[in-house]
Image 1 (spheres, rainbow, N blue to C red):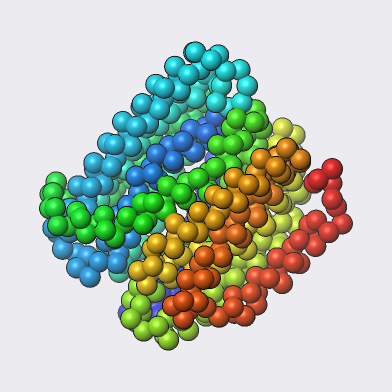
Image 2 (cartoon, rainbow, N blue to C red):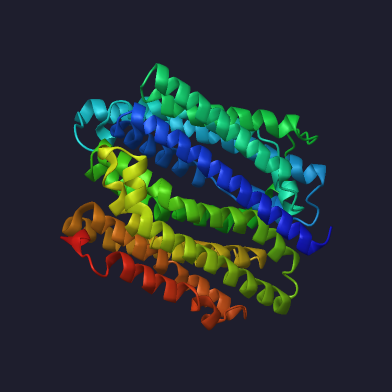
Length: 446
């Protein structure tokens, strides 16, 4: 199979798998929103945010390391990486248990009665879902190896089977016992199924192997990813940490659904860029001229699709929300339309990121997230105080565009920036979307 055919095949599998994944996710969400109260979704959203934080603060780019390694099939290389992954899984588990305990003590001492942090079920849920970190730590590295080779078939099947298992468990639990435990069960079951299938569907086997030289090589590669991941967490989840102290669990639950729906397009972009474009760019990283040509062609197609999807979704979202959800979730449509403004920025930033990673420029990602965090720190409190949740979401949207600045600076320095080709699709689409959605209605800020 030619390189082009491999790319088309891998990209198609990722898109089909992602589409099915989102259908499963949306279907499960539509069912459980009718069985459970909005505040339960708010509490679980915060559990996910906190767990995601501990996980990202320990990220050293293990998957990216394997994908980019010249000897990526070497058993000693894989064993060393897997050993680090196992240690990381247990570390995340211990930290989450500690966080659960400290939060329980904090609630007892200060008798918090408002905001998501004051919900008495939050510490318990953190402790329950922490078991997922151990499962993830023992996962096979087969996905990283096969991603490098653009062999996505079985990997996408595993992801769908794991997600389906979690969704079925959640729906069944919510139907029989409509409590927050139903939401907590999904992630744990999904992680366990992923672990099981990562070994039963592949012949990869690992053993603990601590090689100081290889471990240092991993950390040298991932040190900037580690720092960037920590800052990335604040950039991506800082708004939710802020909202957790300012709004009720029910309001955060409604917001979490808007974020989920808005994330359909951005998550698709992340899937394609990380699983398809990164391997493609990595193979051409020694030929800058060819790499730049491929990059611009890819961006043209991707930006066009993202823009079309965002325009259609944004215009019809109020009608879709009325059809799909009951009256408790009416505010989802307002939040969703505003959040979709970030889709254009994500199309640019995500592809730029993997381009720079393929060139070994991992340090710039830290700068990207630093810019986003700084803009959130400045804008979020002011916007929230002026316009409430809507103002806070506007600050989040602006921060997504601010983060592109350091990427452009680095791309220019390595000869990869063609500014006209960067904005030829995105800028007109952004202006058109803004006019269609907000041009005739400033009720968002009244």
